Length: 77
Image 1 (cartoon, rainbow, N blue to C red):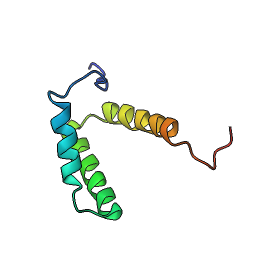
Image 2 (image 1 turned 180 degrees about the vertical axis):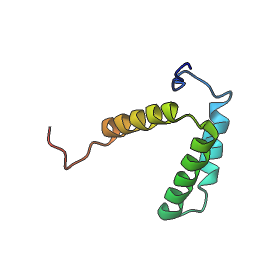
Image 3 (image 1 turned 90 degrees about the vertical axis):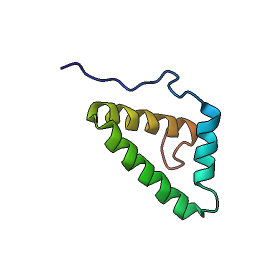
Image 4 (image 1 turned 60 degrees about the horizontal axis):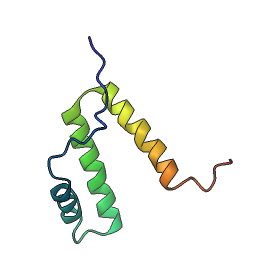
């Protein structure tokens, strides 16, 4: 069985429409409800992907990018 890899190249047909959809989905939500929406999207899309190897790659990359964008103030360099 071939190991699947996370698709990192451009894969959306219309990035503008995607970001509009993402922004519109949060319209009128407070921060707490927006976070719940994000969690629901992660669960739904993870179920759709269904491949644990791909999901592990995605979660690991998201964590690395998070640390690059907003480092943990409690971490020691």
